[in-house]
Amino acid sequence: MNPEIKARLHLWIDGHVQGVGFRAFVLDRAQRRQLTGWVRNTYQGQVEVLAEGSRDQLDGFLDEVRRGPRSAFVTECKVEWENATGEFSRFEVRPTA
Image 1 (tube, rainbow, N blue to C red):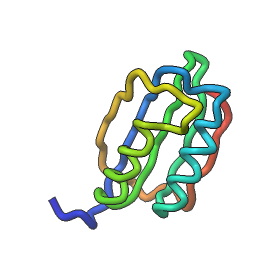
Image 2 (cartoon, one colour):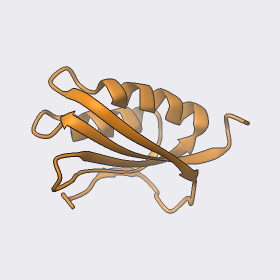
Image 3 (spheres, rainbow, N blue to C red):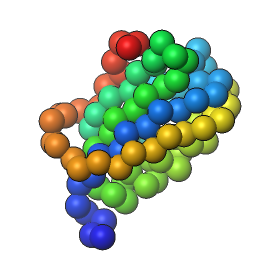
């Protein structure tokens, strides 16, 4: 696969991931990699992420998110690869859903 082809990464992260700066960590890592999309907490206690960028950018981002910030403890990270839509112009933190 061409690493410059745009892709979409949809994540649901479980563990001790709320109230520990996880969304700010994801926002920082996404912006460093020039990804677009969003991150939010869920009412089920997860952090959900939808990010678009090149496959190389997303692979590195996924590695970082699976580890999370030092204050977090990730027990599971559900990953879905999808086709990019180009609908986002930046990466943002969204309200809990």
